[in-house]
Image: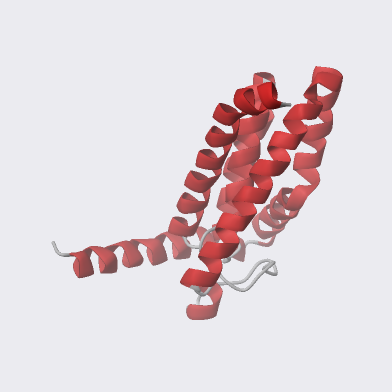
Length: 183
């Protein structure tokens, strides 16, 4: 199988996955549920996790906030660069059968910034306070699903967003002891 056929196969699977998941948004209660998840993923859930970690860890956690902010800024820079370079339209813009369940925060689809930040925050917070993974892992999966159910992203957008988020979080966690010595 050559590159062109592989690319066509991936795009076909991407569309099929998007159509399958977006079909769930036709039920009003499911669409509302994922819309709420998506909105909480805009920041409210993560600010709550930040507060919980702060209470559990105390003032010693202040330096980790800096790491998280650096990671968030790095992740945002990466996904904005990729969005402007790839300019992939969102699924609902290309396929009329895809129902838009929530307004997008920006114009392009690739990669999913919500998923990137959800995975990054989960990995970083989970490394600080593993007990919170019981809340964060299911929520992160729901955020990723919400992006496809709501017609905003293809599965590959979400997968790449998750990979970038995990990579940024891992880099921050690995670099944290080095920066801690410098500070």
